[in-house]
Amino acid sequence: MSAAWRRRWREYVLLTRLDKPIGILLLLWPVLWALWISADGLPPLWILTVFLAGTILTRSAGCILNDFADRDIDPHVERTRDRPLAARRVSPFEALTLFTLLMLTALALVLTLGWQVTAYALVAALLLLTYPLFKRFFPAPQLYLGVAFGWGVPMAFVAVQGGVPPIGWWIFAVTVLWALIYDTYYAMVDREDDLRIGVRSTAVWFGKADLAIIAALQLLMIASLWKIGAMANLGLVYFIAVLIAAVIFHRNLWWARHRDRAQCFRAFLGNHQAGLIVFVGIVLATAQR
Image (tube, rainbow, N blue to C red; front, side, top):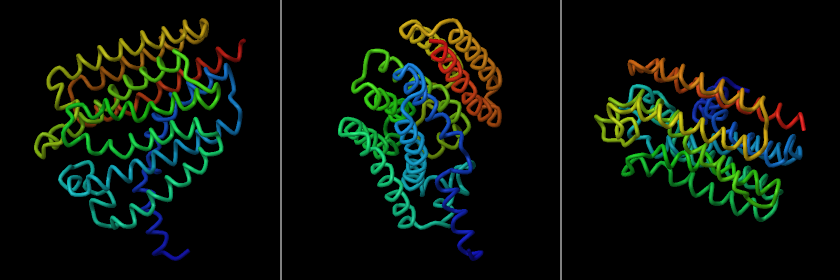
């Protein structure tokens, strides 16, 4: 491969954020929670494969679409000004072509799981396509992002069980809460830039109450995870995992207490550990059946 092509592929990696897997992980953990709980253990391997690949593909496609929508805004934000579209190193046509290829590949995978899962996937695609618009007028686009990120949860239950029981919607609600938490930390990094250029976010909307609201959302999420454990009869090991996740949440809040940009971003990244520990708790609990 020539040096020019290596540089091009590098730009595509940056465009899809494959160099920053944190977004994949935050999207993936609730899907894995749902797959393990719906299957009461290890889910069918093809279903697991489709959801793993689909998460990577759709997250990458979502990053492209977000950057395409914000290509004239990102140059004015410190954290985003060097993104490939913002810096004009990738053309809009290239970006949309890559987006289409990723989405078609994801669709081909989900079609193997039947029409019901495909129908849910089309709703997920609609949420993905419309999310970038919400930053223009909706005061809490992180809430809409949570719905988009969480839609893989009911999809997982449909793939395994053929429908979504009440516990599936509980996990979906927890995922929405979690997105509000971690993406508010993320938005706090850009708050000054967003205020200057008029971009909406929960960090802007919550104002000085941001940390108090995050703390309340964290308590609500921990209580909901506890409820899920009781509904699924997951046992002691799961509840210990939830308590560890609560400690991680408290640590993240402590990191962000001065609203320093770097520490807010650190708190955002720290949410991955909470998702992982809850997943480990579910795996160990279901393995003991």
